[in-house]
Amino acid sequence: MKAAGVNSVTLGVFSWAKLEPKPGAREFGWLDRLMDLMYDNGIGVVLATPTSSPPPWMGRLHPDTLPRDEDGRTEWWGGRQHFSHSSATYRRYAAAITEDLAARYGSHPALTMWHINNEYCTYDWGDEAATTFRRWLQDKYDTLEALNTAWGTAFWSQGYGDWDEVLPPRHAHYLKNPTQVLDFKRYTSDMLLECYVAERDIVRRHTPHIPVTTNFMPMWVGQDAWKWAGEEDLVSVDMYPDPRDPFGAQNGALIQDMTRSQARGGPWMLMEQAAGPVNWRGVNHPKPRGLNRLWSLQSVARGADAVCYFQWRQSRQGAEKFHSGMVSHAGEEGRTYQEVKRLGAELAALGPEVTGSHIEADVAILHEWNAWWAGAQDGRLSSEVDYPQVVRAWHRALWEAHLTTDFAHPEHDLSAYKLVVVPQLYLLTDAAIDNLLSYVRAGGTLVCGFLTGVADEDDRVRPGGMDARLRELFGIRTLHEWWPLDAGETAECDGFRGTLWSEELEAARDAELIVPYKGGELDGLPALLRKGRAWYLSTLPEPPALRDLLADVAAGTGVRPPLDGLPAQVEAVRRGELLFVFNHGRETVTVEVPDTHRDVLTGEQVTGSVELARYGVAVLAP
Ligand code: GLA
Image 1 (tube, rainbow, N blue to C red):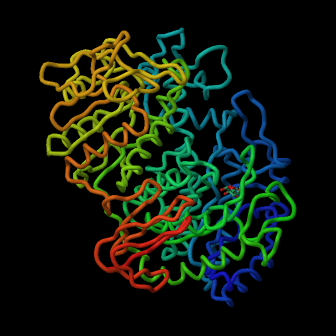
Image 2 (spheres, helix red, strand yellow):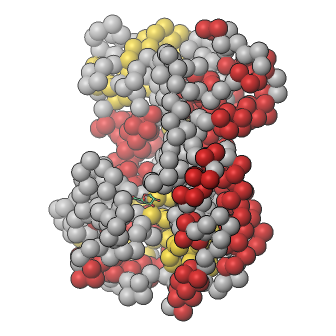
Image 3 (tube, rainbow, N blue to C red):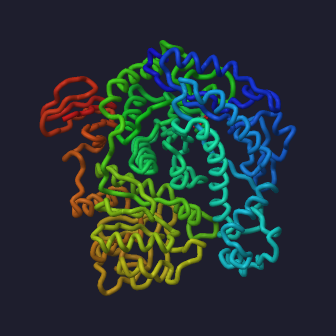
């Protein structure tokens, strides 16, 4: 580890059975030894609470700690994460082991950070969950009448006369009540957050000076990460883009941009990545030479102050024995470790120049979980419309235009951004709509995609199929019908082809028709229209068209890429004083850079241009 420049190690994730082999017993000896060993070698410890994988005895003695799926099946021990967030017994045991860990290691000199649980991502439809769901609903609605109104239970004879009739949305004959499902998703995220907060508060009581985090799964559907991030001292994320994905680098950039934004611009931590293959895709490819370095430095460029991996040594047993580690089965001579080691030396050199510095983005992409949850349900017009894919398409367009973007919640202050884009926010609160209106009124430019502002907070369709204030903003007189497109089908427009969706829109008199549909039922109607600084796209243009459109609108607001004339496979990002330049391609490229710089990685002077070989990176200081 020292040879590879490792200065931080996470310990204790999933170690509950080792720490508490019998109910109430404590076995800390092995962890004492590891904590001391780390400290003696100058390595800090991110100490995890073990609570994401309860020991087998717990399930056996306390079946109430095991979650049930929507069909009523139990999730048994033998894998991991088989805990019910609602189980009072689970929470009691989790608090007790957390308390004892914090008491024992709170003053250990190796301790640098707390890592609570791991990738909170469980659901529970069981009986105890039904009780906590009802409690959550009572807090929210106060009366059953209010719940019946919000859920629209007049439809299909769903009216509730007693709180005990209310259930988690379990297996049902046909479509479930969408607001019930939406509330269940909100509730699940909140229940898991309660588990996190309970443990966080315990460790904070012992060590108020030590930061606390829990690792997010990127764009994970089950967790409102905006809300969660507010409860963390430091935001961390696990990233596993597919080495074979032609847009792997862009997907990585999206996660990095989103994590940085959840940290509200502050530094964040890449808690996990794979040095080589994962073992959970259908086919798991290794990272070709240089890719681990490229993607690790990309995280640094986009704000990470730590680059970590899952796992140190590839394990020889258990379910993840074919998941890579920093030291692979090939051992220290293996290419994976050799590359990890070289990167460690580079990170050590880069650290002092970059740590704590910020990224300024002029463009924000709006993203929000309630909109995702409500929009992704059954019973809608097209199952081809996949929210994360739509967000990815918009981020990709901006990434290919070489523009650095933040993500923002639709109720955040947007005034710092010259351009705000909304790929799709099916559900918008009144506060969010007001926020968008004031942003444009104050001089901001807004580009908005289809299926936005359709529903209110209760997933009730807004009159007109889209909020009236938004229609007024974009210059839409009437939204007559939605015309979803089949998989692979395109809608011909004047200048590009639309995918996924189209709309029968009638423009208001004060709107400007920018791109009409060409031919077919929608001939001449607006695919793209604008009213002043508010633009509306009723389809998803194919990638080059969306890129060019957003690049043009951005240029009109004065937003420019960090360098002019960047080749397609090159990414350039400014972090603080440093300009990071990446070649994501396999061909050598020459990138023009004005003035003279010092390449922090090589120590050489760079004048006029820099040559980047396959997967090459330059980090240029003024
Ligand atoms: C997650 C977990 C790790 C490991 C990796 C495998 O990120 O936190 O324990 O299972 O996935 O990719």
